[in-house]
Image 1 (cartoon, rainbow, N blue to C red):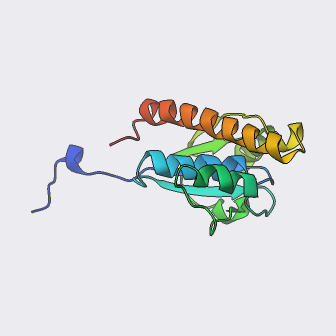
Image 2: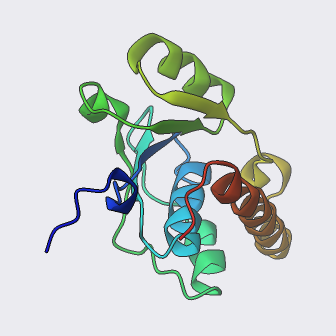
Length: 151
């Protein structure tokens, strides 16, 4: 029997995570968000310029059992006519693009450090990407509660 009670109908939220071109922040946030919510929300990842996912991002997510080896973000232009409940931007360029292109959604901007701009040594990059992952996870845990995205 199908319930007609509106409170019983579970509508999947749709979120776009938009980054620049380094495919680091947007991919990490997207993967962590899916992981935290047990894939109960539709999360898409887009970048301003086509890019492949950063290997350090893949590595630190794999440490949590999250595999993004087969995932690459898509160009933002593919989503111009798509409807999202929430759009998360991860840098100023992405924030500006959202204001001009994508309408009708709650827009949230959150900046994080970019380890690639700070370090060039592999050990430093490993540690910095772990720190980035952990700060993203902390922010997303609060985000999920604030926007009622948890079960």
